[in-house]
Image 1: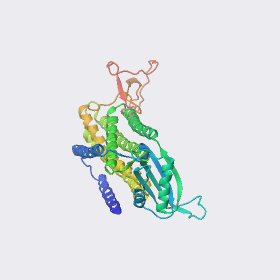
Image 2: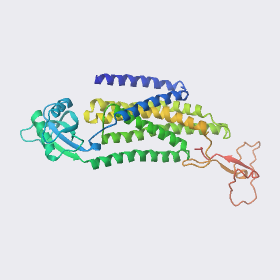
Image 3: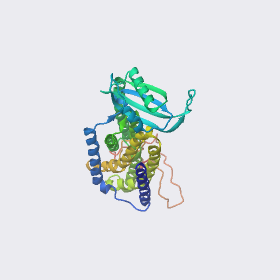
Image 4: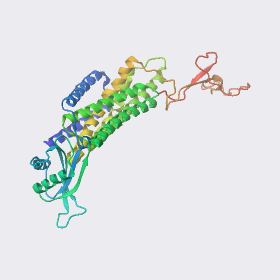
Length: 407
């Protein structure tokens, strides 16, 4: 059943690659379907939020507090084998609560083998709490270890550790702060990068919030354990998603500037058409970037072992959602914003842009070809320096000299 899912992924990737090549020959009306995209996102968000409200998230040891036991066994064991042993544990002094078990995919070499023991072992990691979600005392942890040893046979104790509720609460708060800080800093960066236009930042952050909710919601729906690696995956997706959006936004800005250079600043640009063309022009790049990342993640998910499986699962959801939102959410949102606040050439000199400059006509080289071979006589009037003039001084004769594209 596991490899059936891998086969479905391979077929889907091949179909997307084949479809992506069609963008070299034709232009799709992607933005014309933006209402359908919004509807699909609304359904997905409803499922994700519904799962969070109904099931919540399966908090791991890092967020709930508890104990961890890591051992090396000399015979191959599956998580189900270890779980059966844990279910048979009994003690008059305490009862076990939630347990999470991970086993290695193979044997690893023992760097410090004990005398008379094999030099290779399979790693088994058990995260557990007492009833009520409380961490185990050292003596209680030892009792669990002795039970495992009696049931599973001889084993090597690698480590035991406990995480208290104070540390776990701090980790949860820091994770939330990290996500909020990332969203805020990206909004500020995009605002300045795109000529002090807040529309790009709003569209990018809306797509990021969309990705975060879907990623957490579907993680909850699958019953996966939320731990520190999940937070790392979440921040990775926040960075990945905005990267794809910025590439598309940059092409939109270039195409709008080119249109204004050709048709003049006074005329409103066909914004939806320009956004649609920009998405079509960057589509092959977006597909290639997403699929190369997916291939790596699929290899980790199916062949990287149980330790990395949850991390890869989170990234798979986030990468797919991030690629979708950059094209089908962020870009259509720009059109919705533009319908209410039409884009105009930015004359404010945003970061990275050089606006047109008005200079007196006398100080511009004559760009029209001369009818005779004689050179234009030099002016004898002494002028200290060229003076810039503003648009509200019509008496000064001048021409606009282009100094660069607008933001």
